[in-house]
Image 1 (cartoon, rainbow over the protein chains, first blue to last red):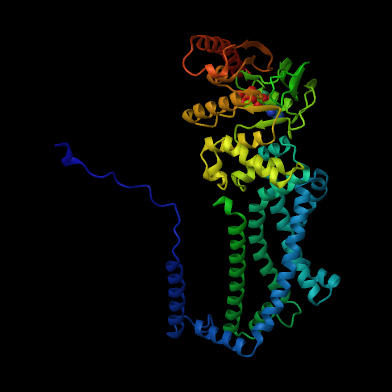
Image 2 (tube, helix red, strand yellow; image 1 turned 60 degrees about the vertical axis):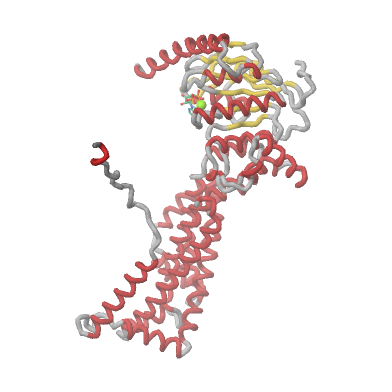
Length: 265
Length: 266
Ligand SMILES: Nc1ncnc2c1ncn2[C@@H]1O[C@H](COP(=O)(O)OP(=O)(O)OP(=O)(O)O)[C@@H](O)[C@H]1O
Ligand SMILES: [Mg+2]
């Protein structure tokens, strides 16, 4: 009988599709920390090379108890928020201008490409001369560092807006401003937001670099001090604060993406 | 020229005078003379790449011809917000706006009250059977529905002339039939002027009062075929329509063959 030989078609359509698995993420994290802790306690990982997570945690608690955490964190956040906000704000504006006007593009886009390639940390001494050793030079470093990638992401986004949509706008007699506001900017928004992701991490890198030169407070200063004292537990504590800052920014931008790009999902 | 007056508004004649167009070295259109009368649907057919879409862009003022001119005869009717209105092959809907928002886009730059614009949107959405989908985003719609949104958007600005560039060719054949019926319905209820580009001869004989056959590139008017049978009476297989379609196909086949050979031999 034919039916004797009937068997289900094997399923082979799986894979290549991500399912959220928060438990796994947490598990990997916990196992890693546990392994590290146990390794340190048993002497498998030498204390000279790496302090135990519990020691780093104690350093963190100490930071909180002495009220220093808030001092360092607020100094850092202030610099980061100022620099990143203005850097990306100017970046989006200039990027739009380059994307919209041929003359601006001809004038500025080679300049942007040229300056984009310079590591902004190399400019820090110059910024110190221009803006002073205080907050000015630190904010300026972050501002410049986040400005250029934002410019490039923005005008790339404008260039990638579907031309047929612009044509459609023109064919309905929309004004230039309407086309920019209602078609070009929303169309470029995905690229702009992914530019924000990149500029956020660049901002944190530059924050630490800038704080390593002449800052009394700030996570970067704290890490530098810990490093020069070979206080590796404090160093790890500082680094994990940075990593938390990065995670928070990525989370915030993810929220913004969910909100502004609902139509894509 | 006299504007047709059958008592229905938005009539305007369109005249193309000796239009020639080229892109750099490539001549695309040569000496096109054509008049489109108010309330008439003119279909344009021709082999691929003969300049049909280009012609439509010239008619709508999205591009300027190298020589010749496109004339609008008579004042565009005052009620018309956008006399020359396109329906695009790929729908051209803003993916971040709902059905309603996409229609309202075409109205926002005109000085009409919120109330009036809401009335227009309600009206065109019900005419295109989309009232239940006003809050849907384009990605949630099927191809046929997307094109109906585009049609609703075009109707909202009360065009004097509709310019349609292969509006059905991104759709499957059943949807195409249904949407063609919808278009004919719309026209029967309230006749509009249209230039309809297609490569589907069946569509052309269903929908066109006159069918303009363009030659291969550079596109020239090879023949104009007039079909007298009224639009409402073209539903089922009609011997005369079959015959016209056969005739169009024989014209097109020669042109397409010749165009193919040209491509092969540079
Ligand atoms: N912006 C442009 N720049 C240069 N060449 C163009 C441009 N637009 C169209 N062409 C050329 O002009 C010719 C006619 O193009 P058009 O799109 O008008 O043809 P078509 O008849 O609509 O073809 P299809 O049936 O494939 O839609 C083609 O050879 C095309 O390559
Ligand atoms: Mg075309």
